[in-house]
Length: 255
Length: 132
Image (cartoon, rainbow over all chains, first blue to last red):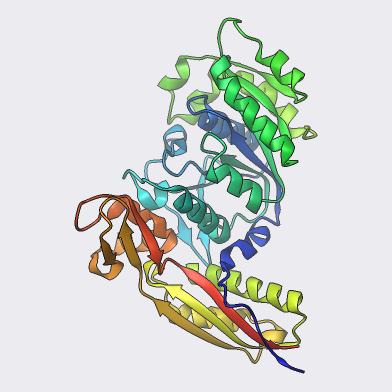
């Protein structure tokens, strides 16, 4: 027997507990896009709520730490998170919800990439999601720190991509899809949001790139008027159309 | 308590080292705890002792606290977090997610929120000593 001393380079212990925190979560879906403003938060929230209505147990994690918005969609008046050997998500509208807003309130939270990584690791290592059928993650746009960290830290992550009928949005989505393919990260498919008149076929582009096209969701002015009212949100053309797409996500075989 | 989640992360990390190095017994675990996260050391120690596995039953946990040092990226000013006075509600937010200090404190010299946490952020596993 001999004494052994490990290297002195310190280890961040938090990353070693993330798998355990997520071990009872069946599917982990990152709602992502190359660009901001395409409706990721609305799609993520409505998808999570729709899954709850279908009888699944669902968690919703707002991972857009510098620009969180899900609390507005859900109509959360005061975001209170309890702790008991870790962070217990807030229970609202039948789902479990975690957002940085519980800690930063309505203050601006300017974060560099290294800080974004730390927040992501902290919340993944400390949140006790328990048993879930789905954990839906609202991602910040692009292929920066949060996206790379989610891929690094969450082994079973699957991506659901949101695009608008704009060449500018698809330009960035194409890069995201290329990266995910290169890294062998599963992609459930692409949803075309804010569909207006046909100017540019996202469907053809997505199919051409070899990824599943899940469907189109119309541009719906009513959505803005029902933010914070979940029941009214379900009455919109936006939510009804998305609800038709949800079974394709449930039964998807990621590409 | 959040300390339990941190303790669980430390134990998981020590077990990884044990498996990787083929240790039969752990003698000492050194942990650094950053001031910024305001970890309750007594609770952390208690949680560690409760979560110990067989190979760690004789392990000594050495916990060192590290002052939180901040540096402004705009003007280069260096300061210590203990100079900032936060009320208990904000302290709790910073305890859960230390990066939320960027919402609540500013560089005392130039007022910028663009500062970095040089050291003393949270919990680090410094070293594991054991028997092979």
